[in-house]
Length: 347
Ligand code: FNR
Image (cartoon, rainbow, N blue to C red; front, side, top):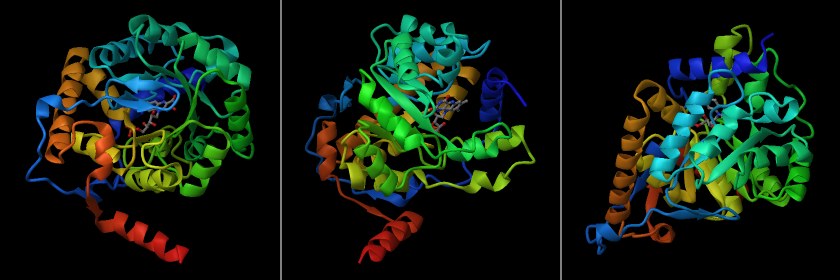
C-alpha cells in the first residue's frame, strides 16, 4: 500500500510517461461548416466566456486540476499559476482532500493564489469531503468555485482505492446546500451520461465538467502502479465528444458546461464550444508542457492556441461565444452512430 503523497508523485510520473487514449475523444467526428462570406473583422473576435456563479472568464481554457498535497509539487503548481496568470486562463488545483483532512502540505495549494492573486481559481475535493472540509478547501485558495471530482473507474483500478460509491450523490447535494461558492462536478476521464447529468442538476450542482475518455487515462496510470488490477478499465469510458453531447442535452447549450478529456488543439476547443461547452479544461498536455518545455514556452503555446481559436470563430462568422449557437455542424463515424442509436432508442 502506498501513501497519498507518493501516489500523487506517481500520477505525475506516469501521466508524463503514457500517451492519451486509447479511446478516441470523438471530436474528429464533428465537422463544422465553413462560411465563405464570414462578414466579420477578425480583430473584433473576443474569446471571453462565462460560467454561472463564477462570472466572466477572459479565456475559454481552464488549466484543469493536476496537483498539490505532496512534497515537491509546490513548484509545479507555482509554474501552472504563472501560466494561468499570464494567459488569462482559470485554474483548478489537484485534490485538497488530504490537506483539509490532515492539514498537510497546504503551502502547495496556497502558492497558487499567491502567484495569481487576481485569477479565477477552483478548489478541488473528492465526493467524500464533508461540507466543512469542502468550505475549508475553498477558503484555503479563496476560490471562486469548488470542483468535486468523480473517479470511480480510477478507484477500482487502484489496490488501495475506494469501493463504496453508494452515497456520492447525497454527499454532493449536501455540499451544494452549504457552500458559499458554486459547485462544479467533474468526471476525470470516463465521461457522463444524461441520467447522471440530470441528477447532478437536480442536486444543486451549478456547473459540470464532462471529463470524457480520450485524453489522460487514469485507470491506465493506476495499472502502471498496480498491474494485477483490472487492466481493461483503461478501455472503459464515454468518449469526450459524446459525453459533452449527453450533458448538453440535459443542461442546455452553454448552461454551465466545461468540456474536458483529451482537448488538445484549437479545433477541439472550438468544436467543444459549438457543441455546447462554455469553456474547456486541459490537464495532461499542460502538465507535459510546463514540465518538459517550461513556463515561457507553455504561455506562448496557449497564446498561439487562443489566436487559432479566433481564426475558427472568424471562419464561421462569429465574434463572440453566444454566436456559436448558430454555427452548423454535422457528425460522422462513431459519434454519429451513438447519437443515432440513442435517438432511435427513444422512439
Ligand atoms: C489529474 N486530474 C485530477 N483531477 C481532479 O479533479 N483532481 C486531481 O487531484 C487530479 N489529479 C491529476 C493528476 C494528474 C497528473 C493529471 C494529469 C490529471 C484529472 C484532470 O483534471 C482531468 O480531469 C483529466 O486529466 C482529463 O483531462 P486531460 O488530461 O485529458 O486534459
